[in-house]
Length: 245
Ligand SMILES: Nc1ncnc2c1ncn2[C@@H]1O[C@H](COP(=O)(O)OP(=O)(O)OP(=O)(O)O)[C@@H](O)[C@H]1O
Ligand SMILES: [Mg+2]
Image 1 (cartoon, helix red, strand yellow):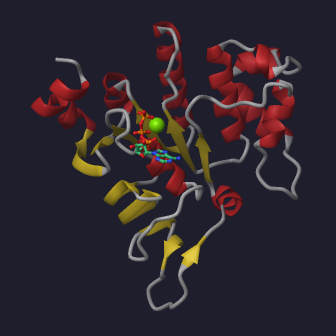
Image 2 (cartoon, helix red, strand yellow; image 1 turned 120 degrees about the horizontal axis):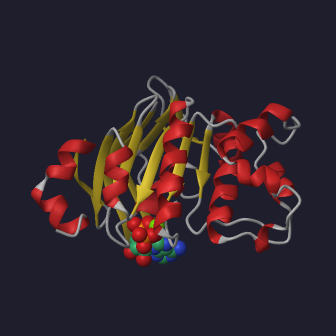
């Protein structure tokens, strides 16, 4: 479904990603784990079009369409705009669960709607409320007054409004109490089970590896390990560095 090949990304003189290649197959949950500053958010922001690869050879392909790169047999370098990438079926839940604090839950969800021209349907809302019944009760509440966990749910709900085939989740468990973390991870599994493919960035490597099919380990901008999540969870280096053993 999604393929990144040899992606370099820089912030000015600072190189954040070096030759990052990864793949997400339809139906999977894939985890991307790594320490602070490893480049996890940078990777997600590149997929969603907020950052561009520094190298023209770096390609991002989603469902056979180039987000970045020169298609085979073509000449023109493709670089798709973020809102078009959303319309293609990718939506990102950014780090730090950014909701619009002055807006209601309902208005926040509207902001995530599928396209700029087509109104969201009732089924779009129902899909969100199916996974997050608490948001339905709080539809009219101003988002800034939601608890941290509820704001995370709203950020995820907003991303679901665009009917994504692939959801990019950036540290959904950050700052949440253990019980809520469990709940959020269960919801991620449910969202996946109802047909949405997931690329999950997490500091909580334990839970991330538990719910994922496969995983990649990113260290200072490079993928250093990859494999089935169960195998990585048994890997000595992973256990020491990311599972606190
Ligand atoms: N806007 C920016 N300008 C300059 N450097 C940046 C910017 N954003 C990130 N970086 C740098 O790029 C590198 C990767 O950052 P990134 O945010 O992708 O890491 P991360 O793996 O998501 O870390 P964390 O777990 O702390 O969220 C870091 O060295 C960071 O300082
Ligand atoms: Mg990050």
